[in-house]
Length: 229
Image (tube, rainbow, N blue to C red; front, top):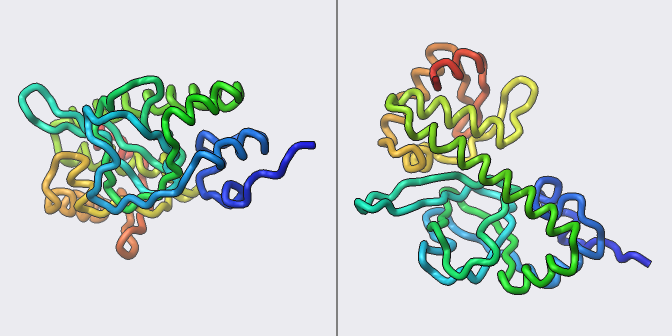
Protein backbone atom coordinates (compact mmCIF):
# COMPACT_ATOMS: atom_id res chain seq x y z
CA UNK A 1 0.00 0.00 0.00
CA UNK A 2 1.52 3.41 -0.94
CA UNK A 3 2.78 5.52 1.92
CA UNK A 4 1.75 9.09 2.66
CA UNK A 5 4.11 11.94 1.70
CA UNK A 6 6.32 13.08 4.60
CA UNK A 7 4.63 15.86 6.59
CA UNK A 8 7.50 18.27 5.96
CA UNK A 9 7.24 17.74 2.20
CA UNK A 10 3.47 18.20 2.23
CA UNK A 11 3.76 21.76 3.58
CA UNK A 12 6.92 22.79 1.68
CA UNK A 13 6.39 26.14 -0.05
CA UNK A 14 8.36 25.03 -3.12
CA UNK A 15 6.92 21.56 -3.56
CA UNK A 16 4.67 22.56 -6.44
CA UNK A 17 7.54 23.93 -8.55
CA UNK A 18 10.63 22.06 -7.32
CA UNK A 19 12.11 18.67 -8.19
CA UNK A 20 9.49 17.12 -5.89
CA UNK A 21 6.56 18.37 -7.99
CA UNK A 22 4.48 15.50 -9.29
CA UNK A 23 6.37 12.80 -7.40
CA UNK A 24 4.50 10.01 -5.66
CA UNK A 25 4.70 9.38 -1.93
CA UNK A 26 7.37 6.69 -2.24
CA UNK A 27 9.77 8.91 -4.19
CA UNK A 28 9.10 11.83 -1.84
CA UNK A 29 9.83 9.63 1.15
CA UNK A 30 13.10 8.50 -0.44
CA UNK A 31 14.17 12.12 -0.98
CA UNK A 32 13.02 13.05 2.52
CA UNK A 33 15.28 10.39 4.03
CA UNK A 34 18.43 11.86 2.51
CA UNK A 35 17.51 15.55 2.64
CA UNK A 36 18.06 18.14 5.34
CA UNK A 37 17.02 21.76 5.60
CA UNK A 38 19.69 24.44 5.60
CA UNK A 39 19.38 28.20 6.03
CA UNK A 40 21.96 30.21 4.08
CA UNK A 41 22.20 33.86 5.23
CA UNK A 42 22.53 36.59 2.61
CA UNK A 43 26.13 37.06 1.55
CA UNK A 44 27.25 33.52 2.36
CA UNK A 45 28.34 30.96 -0.23
CA UNK A 46 26.86 27.50 -0.59
CA UNK A 47 29.99 26.43 -2.45
CA UNK A 48 32.91 27.82 -4.43
CA UNK A 49 34.02 27.06 -7.97
CA UNK A 50 36.56 24.26 -7.82
CA UNK A 51 35.28 22.87 -4.52
CA UNK A 52 34.32 19.18 -4.38
CA UNK A 53 30.74 18.86 -5.63
CA UNK A 54 29.36 17.12 -2.56
CA UNK A 55 25.80 18.47 -2.35
CA UNK A 56 22.79 19.42 -4.45
CA UNK A 57 19.65 21.19 -3.27
CA UNK A 58 16.14 22.40 -3.95
CA UNK A 59 15.79 26.12 -3.29
CA UNK A 60 12.75 26.59 -1.04
CA UNK A 61 12.89 30.35 -0.54
CA UNK A 62 15.23 33.24 -1.29
CA UNK A 63 17.43 34.01 -4.30
CA UNK A 64 20.88 32.61 -5.08
CA UNK A 65 23.47 33.89 -7.52
CA UNK A 66 25.64 31.76 -9.78
CA UNK A 67 29.01 33.47 -10.28
CA UNK A 68 31.96 32.69 -12.52
CA UNK A 69 35.50 34.09 -12.44
CA UNK A 70 36.66 35.16 -15.89
CA UNK A 71 40.20 34.74 -17.22
CA UNK A 72 41.01 38.37 -16.38
CA UNK A 73 39.94 37.90 -12.75
CA UNK A 74 36.55 39.60 -13.01
CA UNK A 75 33.68 37.89 -11.19
CA UNK A 76 30.61 37.67 -13.42
CA UNK A 77 27.15 36.69 -12.19
CA UNK A 78 25.89 34.30 -14.83
CA UNK A 79 22.48 33.46 -13.41
CA UNK A 80 19.97 33.76 -10.59
CA UNK A 81 18.17 30.89 -8.89
CA UNK A 82 14.66 31.31 -7.50
CA UNK A 83 12.42 29.12 -5.29
CA UNK A 84 11.83 25.77 -6.95
CA UNK A 85 15.11 25.79 -8.87
CA UNK A 86 17.53 22.88 -8.54
CA UNK A 87 20.92 23.90 -7.19
CA UNK A 88 24.12 22.12 -8.22
CA UNK A 89 25.01 19.45 -10.75
CA UNK A 90 25.06 15.68 -10.65
CA UNK A 91 27.82 13.37 -11.86
CA UNK A 92 30.61 15.95 -11.61
CA UNK A 93 33.50 15.99 -9.15
CA UNK A 94 34.06 19.75 -8.84
CA UNK A 95 31.73 22.73 -8.74
CA UNK A 96 31.85 24.66 -12.01
CA UNK A 97 30.63 27.95 -10.49
CA UNK A 98 30.35 29.69 -7.15
CA UNK A 99 26.85 29.71 -5.65
CA UNK A 100 26.00 32.33 -3.05
CA UNK A 101 22.96 33.87 -1.38
CA UNK A 102 21.73 37.28 -2.53
CA UNK A 103 19.03 37.09 0.14
CA UNK A 104 18.46 34.82 3.11
CA UNK A 105 17.76 31.43 1.56
CA UNK A 106 16.15 28.20 2.73
CA UNK A 107 17.27 25.02 0.98
CA UNK A 108 16.55 21.31 1.07
CA UNK A 109 20.05 19.87 0.72
CA UNK A 110 20.99 16.37 -0.46
CA UNK A 111 24.37 14.60 -0.47
CA UNK A 112 25.17 14.32 -4.17
CA UNK A 113 26.08 10.62 -4.11
CA UNK A 114 22.97 9.64 -2.16
CA UNK A 115 20.79 11.70 -4.51
CA UNK A 116 22.32 10.04 -7.56
CA UNK A 117 21.56 6.61 -6.08
CA UNK A 118 18.01 7.62 -5.15
CA UNK A 119 17.32 8.95 -8.64
CA UNK A 120 18.60 5.68 -10.07
CA UNK A 121 15.85 3.85 -8.16
CA UNK A 122 13.11 6.35 -9.05
CA UNK A 123 12.90 7.02 -12.82
CA UNK A 124 10.09 9.58 -12.41
CA UNK A 125 12.29 11.71 -10.17
CA UNK A 126 15.15 11.38 -12.65
CA UNK A 127 12.95 12.63 -15.49
CA UNK A 128 11.72 15.56 -13.43
CA UNK A 129 15.28 16.51 -12.54
CA UNK A 130 16.21 16.51 -16.22
CA UNK A 131 13.35 18.92 -16.92
CA UNK A 132 14.41 21.15 -14.03
CA UNK A 133 18.02 21.16 -15.26
CA UNK A 134 16.98 22.11 -18.78
CA UNK A 135 14.77 24.88 -17.36
CA UNK A 136 17.69 26.24 -15.35
CA UNK A 137 19.88 26.29 -18.47
CA UNK A 138 17.12 28.14 -20.32
CA UNK A 139 16.89 30.73 -17.53
CA UNK A 140 20.66 31.31 -17.59
CA UNK A 141 20.41 32.06 -21.31
CA UNK A 142 17.98 34.87 -20.46
CA UNK A 143 20.36 36.31 -17.90
CA UNK A 144 23.46 36.88 -20.03
CA UNK A 145 21.73 39.13 -22.62
CA UNK A 146 20.31 41.10 -19.69
CA UNK A 147 23.81 41.90 -18.43
CA UNK A 148 24.97 42.75 -21.95
CA UNK A 149 22.65 45.78 -22.00
CA UNK A 150 24.84 48.87 -21.77
CA UNK A 151 22.32 51.24 -20.16
CA UNK A 152 21.61 50.91 -16.46
CA UNK A 153 17.90 51.61 -17.07
CA UNK A 154 17.71 48.67 -19.46
CA UNK A 155 19.32 46.30 -16.95
CA UNK A 156 17.05 47.33 -14.08
CA UNK A 157 13.94 47.14 -16.26
CA UNK A 158 14.90 43.67 -17.50
CA UNK A 159 15.52 42.46 -13.94
CA UNK A 160 12.13 43.77 -12.77
CA UNK A 161 10.39 41.95 -15.61
CA UNK A 162 12.35 38.77 -14.85
CA UNK A 163 11.52 38.92 -11.13
CA UNK A 164 7.83 39.56 -11.83
CA UNK A 165 7.76 36.45 -14.02
CA UNK A 166 9.71 34.24 -11.63
CA UNK A 167 7.91 35.50 -8.50
CA UNK A 168 4.41 34.91 -9.91
CA UNK A 169 3.14 38.48 -10.11
CA UNK A 170 -0.64 38.61 -9.82
CA UNK A 171 -3.03 39.58 -12.62
CA UNK A 172 -2.44 43.27 -11.89
CA UNK A 173 1.33 42.94 -11.98
CA UNK A 174 1.89 43.06 -8.21
CA UNK A 175 4.68 41.11 -6.51
CA UNK A 176 7.14 41.39 -3.64
CA UNK A 177 10.73 42.08 -4.63
CA UNK A 178 12.81 39.08 -3.52
CA UNK A 179 15.96 41.23 -3.45
CA UNK A 180 17.01 44.41 -1.70
CA UNK A 181 18.26 47.34 -3.77
CA UNK A 182 21.80 46.37 -2.77
CA UNK A 183 21.34 42.78 -3.95
CA UNK A 184 19.82 44.00 -7.22
CA UNK A 185 22.85 46.25 -7.71
CA UNK A 186 25.22 43.35 -7.07
CA UNK A 187 23.35 41.13 -9.50
CA UNK A 188 23.45 43.76 -12.25
CA UNK A 189 26.96 45.08 -11.69
CA UNK A 190 25.65 48.55 -10.80
CA UNK A 191 25.88 50.92 -7.84
CA UNK A 192 23.00 50.81 -5.38
CA UNK A 193 22.39 54.51 -6.00
CA UNK A 194 21.97 53.78 -9.71
CA UNK A 195 19.39 51.08 -9.05
CA UNK A 196 17.45 53.34 -6.67
CA UNK A 197 17.55 56.19 -9.18
CA UNK A 198 16.21 53.94 -11.95
CA UNK A 199 13.39 52.64 -9.75
CA UNK A 200 12.40 56.18 -8.78
CA UNK A 201 12.46 57.26 -12.43
CA UNK A 202 10.31 54.30 -13.49
CA UNK A 203 7.74 55.25 -10.86
CA UNK A 204 7.74 58.90 -11.97
CA UNK A 205 7.19 57.77 -15.57
CA UNK A 206 4.20 55.63 -14.59
CA UNK A 207 5.93 52.35 -15.43
CA UNK A 208 5.83 50.90 -11.91
CA UNK A 209 4.36 51.65 -8.50
CA UNK A 210 6.41 51.12 -5.34
CA UNK A 211 4.67 50.28 -2.06
CA UNK A 212 6.61 49.87 1.16
CA UNK A 213 10.10 48.39 1.15
CA UNK A 214 9.51 45.52 -1.28
CA UNK A 215 6.11 45.94 -2.91
CA UNK A 216 6.10 46.55 -6.69
CA UNK A 217 3.38 46.74 -9.31
CA UNK A 218 4.13 46.79 -13.02
CA UNK A 219 1.76 49.49 -14.30
CA UNK A 220 2.87 49.42 -17.93
CA UNK A 221 4.72 46.17 -18.70
CA UNK A 222 4.89 46.92 -22.43
CA UNK A 223 6.66 50.24 -21.93
CA UNK A 224 8.93 48.71 -19.29
CA UNK A 225 9.83 45.96 -21.77
CA UNK A 226 10.64 48.64 -24.34
CA UNK A 227 13.05 50.22 -21.85
CA UNK A 228 14.63 46.81 -21.29
CA UNK A 229 15.18 46.55 -25.05
